[in-house]
Length: 308
Ligand code: GDP
Image (cartoon, rainbow, N blue to C red; front, side, top):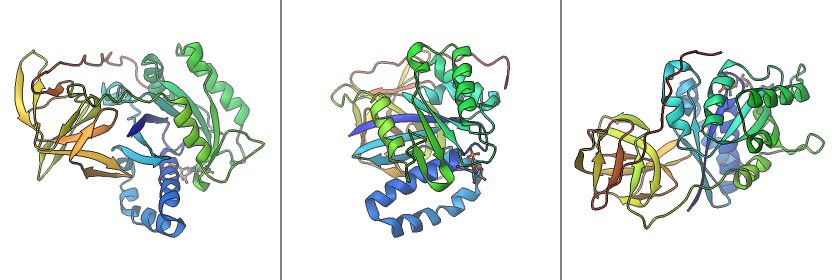
């Protein structure tokens, strides 16, 4: 399997949820046809009502046989190091900006981290249907913001998409609008680097986040750096003080749509969850039993200024 791992950076209400809905719907449509896609999306309504949680998880879509993991970024300094950790799992970011409002504090806060981490940005100007849209100006403001945040030449050379997420549209050329989001998918495949997929190497994964299930206990989340791990396999949990605990992967999970699904094996490049690693803490490494090697912890400069 080949992957692309991306984050979505957006100020609240700029259309993150709507955009992800559109991406999901399009991949469902490609796979199953329009009617089934509509029905599947409707059954997500309950989840949608829970609002902010919908994207707290990883969303995964498949396009042309490539799995695209889309992670949400908490957009506020209150989340401390979580932004850096989440961004550490991805190689690129969709920077979603409202065509009328332009970049806002939350855009800026997360974008700064993304730029620092060297991620490749794709700028998506959303809501171009708004009466008060000022598309060109907003593109320029976004460019200026990136320059101010220290973007390198490569990052400043970002591609741009124009979107009406609410109508499931995103396209490259304002003079040649498209009725769907295939140009966005193509751009992600083309422009965002694929993570390395070395399945033969000893397993290695940085614990980026923790979750909890009533049945399975603690669940660790992260991107598999290299290798793979099977259900029932023993691994080493490498603590920050250099000690290790031998522990067993009770159940690996991958993602499909908005759901976390059980897998027999998960491997390099994918963003996964593992149940069974009971003592795990954020920043620790889950590693191969025989050949464990710790990953560096993503350095977190705790924000001193919030939402500037
Ligand atoms: P989020 O907070 O970033 O997840 O934003 P939502 O996806 O919830 O969208 C916020 C509001 O913007 C909702 O009322 C959407 O219907 C609306 N919206 C999303 N995309 C578009 C668009 O392309 N055009 C217009 N006019 N409104 C949109």
